[in-house]
Length: 55
Image 1 (cartoon, rainbow, N blue to C red):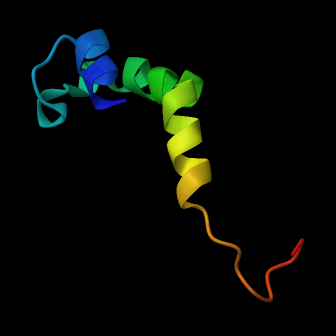
Image 2 (tube, one colour):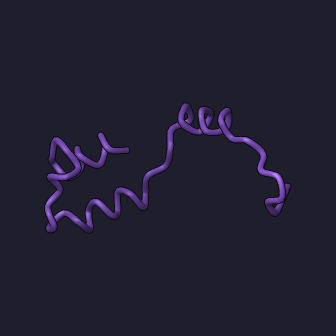
């Protein structure tokens, strides 16, 4: 996510994002979806939680 966000805002590091690019950054974050590889890694590391609704 960071690489894409930096690219959209034209900076090398997230800390360099300017206030004028705040709305652009927020739109990118709102629209972002993880890749298939990221989703699979998350699924592999998820552990069932005892006592959580839905378990």
